Length: 268
Length: 159
Image (cartoon, rainbow over all chains, first blue to last red):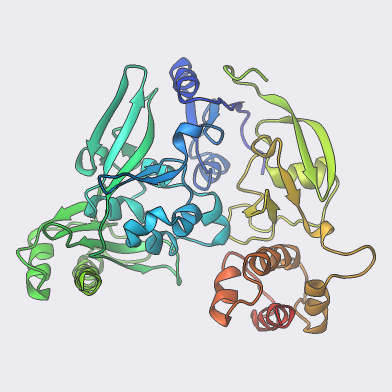
C-alpha cells in the first residue's frame, strides 16, 4: 500500500530525537511500527514526519539494578523481553509478551510502543498498571517519572506530550503475578483482560473495559472478594461486535479471578 | 541524510540474499514494495497488506519480519533474506523439498512467507516440538491446506 508522503529522520541520540519531535507538531515517534504503520496505511493517522527511534542506544536494553528494579528501555521488543535473563526478575513480563500476536510482531513490536499507543485492548497497559510500574519521560527540560495512574490518560493518550519521549519503564522484581484474557483467537486482540499482582498488597488492573486500565484493590485474594471488587467498580464498558457491555462486565469478573488465582499460585 | 532533518527520500543500502543494493527510495515506501518493485524480487508476496497474513515475511538481520509492516528506509544498512535466497543453486533446500514432498502448498500464495517463518524457526530451534512449530507459524495464514501438510513438512525437515 502506498502511504501518504512522509518525512523520515533517524537520530542517533535521545537529544536529537526530542529536538526533531519539537521542531514539527506533525512529527511522530516510530518505534517498532507494528501499530503505527498500519494506522498510516488506514489513513487513521498521517504524520508529517517520522522519528525512527531504532538507533538510539539510550532507549535500548533491559537491566536489573542492585535495588531489585528492572529498567526496561522503551525500545525493548517483546522477543527481547521474553529472552532476557534480567527480565526473569519479573517473569510475568515475558509470559505476557509471549501472548502478543505472533513471532513477527513480537520481533519488532516494543514495550514503549505498546504503552504509548495505549489502545485499551493492548496487553501491557493493564499489566504494567498491576505491577505498579514507573514511566520515565524525557523532554527538552529533562526527565520526569510518573506512575501508571498518571501515565495512562485516555484512549490513545498518555502523559507523553508533544516533544517528549518515554525512555524507560521501571518494574520492581517479583513473582506473585497473574494475567488472564479472553482474546480473539488463541493469542489475538483482547476482548477483556486482567492482570493481578500480590507483590506487596493485592492490585488488579482490568483492560478493555474503560479508556485506561481500571486499578482495583480487593480486600483479599479470595474469589468472592475479587468479584465484589470488580462489581463495585461499576464498570460501563463499550459494546462492540465481539462482546456486549454486559458480557464484558461479566468477563471482567471471570478474568480477574483467574489472574488473582495465577498470582497466588506463582507466590508459592 | 542529515541526522537532524526530515527527508522524504533517501539513499538506502540493503543487502538482500548476499547482494548489496543501493537505491533512492521514498520514506513512505514499504519494505515489501522495495523488495518486489525496486529489486524485482517478486517471491515475497503481498497478501493482506495489514500485517495479518504473513505472506510478506522476510528475515531482516536474522529476525523474522513482516515486510509490509516496515519501511524500506528502516532497513537501511540491514541484511535481508527472502525466499529467493533459500535454494542452493538449482536445488531446493531441505525445507523446500520437504514442502514439495508433503504437498504443503496448493495455490502457493502463502508459501514464501511460510518458508521464511519455518526457516527462522528451525534456525533458532532445530528440533521444535509440535506446539513450537504451531507457534512458530502462527503469524502466517494459509487458506488452502488447513495447515496440516505445512506442519508435516516442517516437522519432517526438522528430523
